[in-house]
Amino acid sequence: MIAKPGSALKNQKINDQIIAQASQELAEKIPAFKQVLKLHGPPPLWGREPGFATLIYIILEQQVSLASAKATFDKLECAILISPKNFLKLDDLQLKAVGFSQQKTRYCRIVANAILAGTLELDSFQTLPSQQVKEKLMSLTGIGHWTSDIYLLMVLLRADVWPHGDRALAVAAYEIFNMEHIPTYEELQQMAKKWKPWRSVAARLLWHHYLSTPRLKKPKKL
Image 1: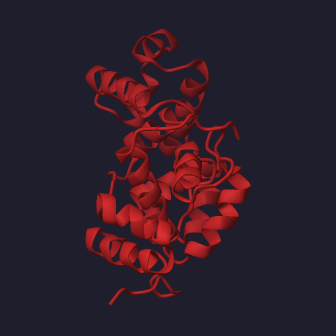
Image 2: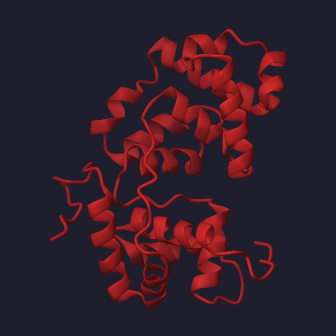
Image 3: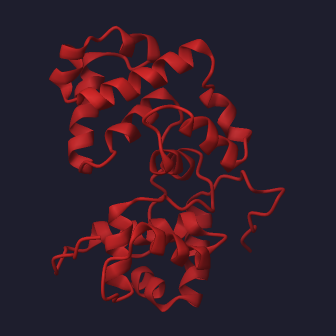
């Protein structure tokens, strides 16, 4: 039996077993999710290690392809042992050489300085409510809803987080629900309310479809 994320369990981490069970629960209510589950099975956990390096990786993923972000992050890993102190030792030219834009260089330096100053304590996030985590992350320039939501969903593994502003989720919803247009992010957020208390699992199901299925039709613009 799945433990519902109520007040006592709101910070409980999900795992592969919970994802499989919650996917089945969503599939029983929503035919489109049932089809995804039938074709591709339960989605992966896609969990990530907590900390500065992962937050930098998520910032790199903002508005670029996953392959591009990974290439830059891999080059950074080859250049340094990733930590706030070591990151701040790299100058603009060195970061540009591994693939950082001027904007993302600024964002990641802000994060590094905040951690070193003690104003951003990533270790404390494990026990904080999701809204407080979002507020702390979004207080930093360069971190918005999507970045903070992805940290909650993939690092802290919270059960009921919807990553606002994710293009792949919008395209996947357009496809599996046979919609007339790709939903706006606001429309998609409204749709996701029906998938509580497992919005994180619903997002994984949609990503699972997106990554497992070639784009057969050119998606319309948002």
